[in-house]
Image (cartoon, rainbow, N blue to C red; front, side):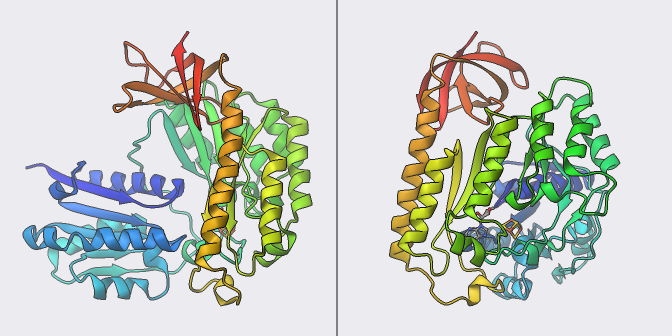
Length: 437
Ligand code: 5AD
Ligand code: SF4
């Protein structure tokens, strides 16, 4: 009889890729993917805790499985990821949801197979949260779900300790994979027909950090030297480590997309200092200038936070000014979320909900207007997109250009995974519509 698994993923691209590793583990146990959690024999929740709402969302969804589990006693429910790795959270989870069978953290995803097998032989829940042992585990084959795009980890963890951020506490110290392992993985992916590779790390610019023989720009160059037509992307870049060498390697290699995700977080020097970001708004603008000097048409995207403790109207205005000055092609805007255990959680001067709401709406309106302005310049142009999906609702294929802009277009035959020229006929906010040429 067929056995099925279902994975619910919360949070960032890093988690999406980790879910591909979870899928790899479960398929090695003979399970197949299913879309409906009701049919699952193993249901995994791969959680995120970067903001309170991500955590609440996961808690809500897990809670809803109580009835299903009462009907399907043999079903295994497993919860892993960042949420469970927070101190004491695994116990809270176990107490709140005693029907959860397996609880694991960010440092032992590779042991999920063992946990599932163990749970099949015992009644008691299997709970194991390990401390960061500084290791990189290479033995987790992924079952990739995003063809023609593939995600490849290059670093794990983070050493930056931005004062608002929980990541360094739940993902441990920064460690880099060996460059040969990364290059071999990418070479194999290209051989397997993948067309877009995104290198992943909390701060890709500090790849190696004294522990590897090559720097991040050198790693990019090695990967760009692999034969074949493919695109190379990377995220996330911390501005403090963004170098001239990186801009030069982007400029010199057509395979490396002219798009950099460079989170600025705030435009206020006072707030940046309190956030422990280690740069000022002038430093940031300098990095942007360097990037544009070598890669004039480079698109820049960013992350922004409003409502950090003690953020004044003036501080917020500085963020708006910076957004105006840089002209980001798009940006993720967040309301500050207090995370227990971080330095900022102990700061006085939490900004009220009303003020945060007003600021986020104003910021989003500005960011969107910039994105719309840039989208409008596409109309009439021909762009090269990599077709990555078919949108059933729109009845159209979709793909991105190298700047990350999504375009929708019709095609009689399947063009998934193909590079195509599309003439843009309309711009609607962030996305574009066009025709194959
Ligand atoms: N509150 C709001 N946003 C946060 N981020 C990280 N921690 C928090 C927090 N506590 C945002 C940052 C980061 C992105 C991945 O999430 O902008 O760049
Ligand atoms: Fe969090 Fe800062 Fe590390 Fe990014 S660089 S993961 S925001 S601590």
